[in-house]
Image (cartoon, rainbow, N blue to C red; front, side, top):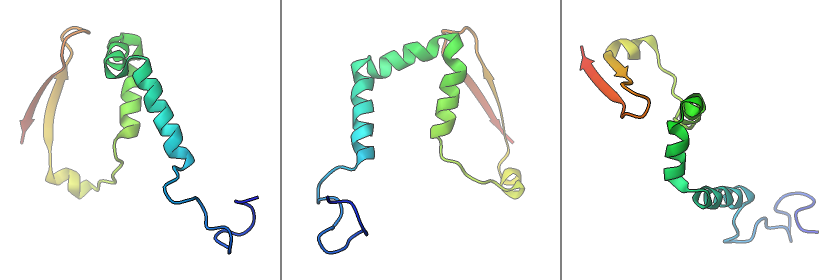
Amino acid sequence: MPGKGKRFEKGNAGRPKGAKNKFTCLKDSFLEAFEGIGGTQELIEWAKKTQNRPQFYQMIARMLPKQEVSEEDCEAVKTNFTITFVNPGDRLLDTRKED
């Protein structure tokens, strides 16, 4: 049976050229399901519900790239900003003031 034994021995060249790996197939399935349940518009409607906001922000935080920042980097760029929610359904107001 292919796939058993040592990798890349004679007769076991690995995945055939052009074949999708399992992760790609799984990702494609999730994207298809996402579109099937309403896509971006449905996600927006879900995120607008107050009880879903913490989960939404957690998902975004997990998707953002992680960087290590030193104290010196923080001192080099200081930005003061205020985020104000006027009403739960209104747009986010972001006023930034750079020092």
